[in-house]
Length: 394
Image (cartoon, rainbow, N blue to C red; front, side, top):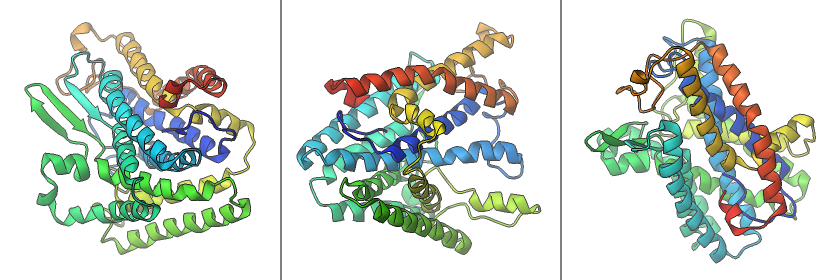
């Protein structure tokens, strides 16, 4: 989720800025989950029931997770420039398992507020953790092998779209095909697998291979040229695949009665599990943004970097803050203790029939981001000034 080294003489500014931007946008979707009136009852991407405002509110956050994972791979490569392969391999494996534990113990608690852990939620930190473990193991091979495995996972996993039965087992759902379903393992207990592991691993592996463009001796003009070529090339691949409308996404687009809705259908690609077309759209955009942000020095850029330098710290805190605010709104809206638990919702203090209009969602989102600014700035300074080993895990 962040640069994996404990000491960097010079951070890559464009990476920190872009990462900060996606961390902020990501919080919008999580606030929507807890505060919007239809978040638990309707799909905001369903063109037959949604509104353009609600669709875009959900759709724009689609860029966060793949960019998040891709930049984690880039950061792993950058970190490896000051480590041996063996050192980087061991670190990634240890940090990967640490992230998995944090997802299960800390983040599941923050999302559900259920100390009994009736529901464990496997989300992006879970996927990043396992992807780091796999990358750490693959570092024992070669750059070419990592690249080939990354391409195979990203480009090939949509073959399961044509063999539905082959991906229906629990193991295959966790590894490849989960669409966000609930997997029970005991009475009143289960796992919500939002992120199938290996498609996301492919994105991290490609990010690692892409990190070669950020070597210190790389000419800036050369990098800028390559970023432009790769960004446009990947987006062009998205357009071609989408126009062919056959492979790379299980949800083909279609012409709608209203032209703008046809455009929404065209960009409405599948996140669960992350499809090839989804990856091309989001990662291609990320590559172009890395180029655009290469020399950015505006006040907005500096603001974004505060969050981008400490994304894991921000990520964990924001879930606790969002859910705590949900508790405040829960009681402020007249709800009682009898409504804390809703059997149709995995989140305490968040009944299915609870929520507010979209403008409230945006207001809470802005408040969450601003409230976390100073804690993030404080922790960023600590990471800059100190070299304690444990800081590399946060």
